[in-house]
Length: 460
Image 1 (cartoon, rainbow, N blue to C red):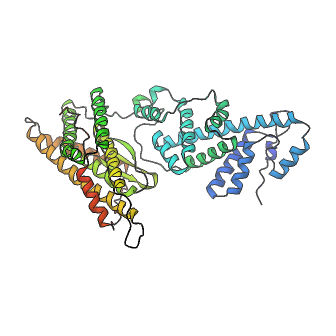
Image 2: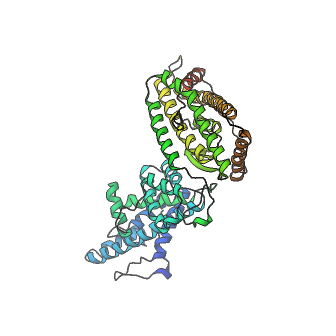
Image 3: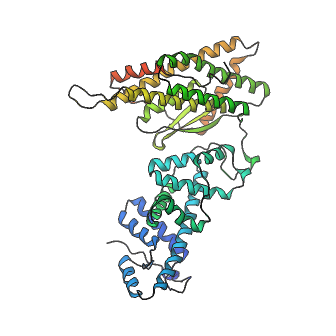
């Protein structure tokens, strides 16, 4: 039998003439019980609490469902009584629930999460509707900070997510949100409770950058990309789009080796400039999604791309992303190249079609797993080779500048950042590959992939 949510005796006060209790404490208790029911997996208690919180007219909140029905029947001749109490109760629940969600987002920042991470993880665990609700709650929570206390990377993430307060005042949020989602209040309440439960269960992450609210003089300084860098990276994005859409493998192959050399040279130029100016900054970090399916070989691909570009990647399997650490110019290249290679690999993999064994059983999954593993392995070989050639050539052209100690110092800085942020890091073993055909096809596709991530960065 379901538990009846009854108001404690000390809370039996009313803010309206109806006599129906709707204190803030009761709302907070109901929400807490609902979140606890979610944690236990008790769907019956969750449904009952959600119904209480919905507070539809004719339902006396604070009583068991059967008692509420009797209360509604007893006051059938007094519509104003029920409507007034219902409005007051629903408004109170909305305020308490919105405040709880905003508080959960604040705690998420304190635990090292960033807006893009939180929204992506919400979608992964709960779905698109919850993801949109999370964006709205983030927008509401960010109102508490002055612009000067929010770092540029956070503002960029918020802009990319479209995290803006689009509703007219918090009192209208419920109606506006239900209208946008074409759903009812009960659905919103359930989504909000599930999101609250997720926020409360978030693990602590290694912090990347300062959370909002940190005064500018309390932040670590990191090298920012110049306007020239941004223009160059814009050209890279356009070039990668062409590489992804080309129908001629030979064209992609011709670009690949030269492209990674230029990427490495771009990194070297940044390193030398930083050493000469004494403004090298510190390694930074960013989190890059690594999604299902075939997340393991995708994580391997990101790792080899990162290592070839003087960065390090740490995969968080359960959270669906990797943390990549390196210097800012290198991080931008890693993310763009990984994204492009993943598009190219997926296109080539899907183009090969489905696979079946002699008995007609599907072997598509094992084929694709082997394909992506082989693709990552071969891409790693090509990237390391091209980067090594670029380093050798740059050292020969250094005009008396001692290049290798500069690069070694940057490598040490990145390794130290990894050790500091992840002191208990362990290396995992990749899953065995059981499909030879997929392995061969993956290596062949990697040989044809365009590695062009910085070919226009240097204008060459």
